[in-house]
Length: 111
Image (cartoon, rainbow, N blue to C red; front, side, top):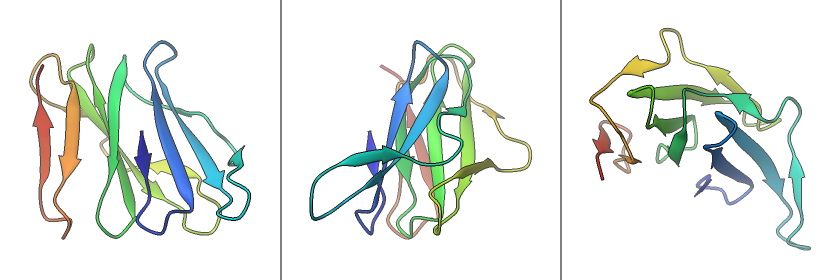
């Protein structure tokens, strides 16, 4: 699960259905509402998601397709759009993904 830096959006990797759910978060009530188009297709068995430090992009570590799905985040709606060329091939059996706070590097980890 990942929360955007503004605390308004929540993203959840759904490993059994190969997608990522995007939900808007109401700070006053604590309620979650799916954003239009959610869930969004990812690679096979996404296990972890993270946003960049500015909340512009979301990344999903796809365990069984050995890739990282990258999405741009629409700040108005919360909808995700795949980045050109995504998913990107990576090493095998990815379990975690983290972005550095300045958005310069993305780290992919194995179990």
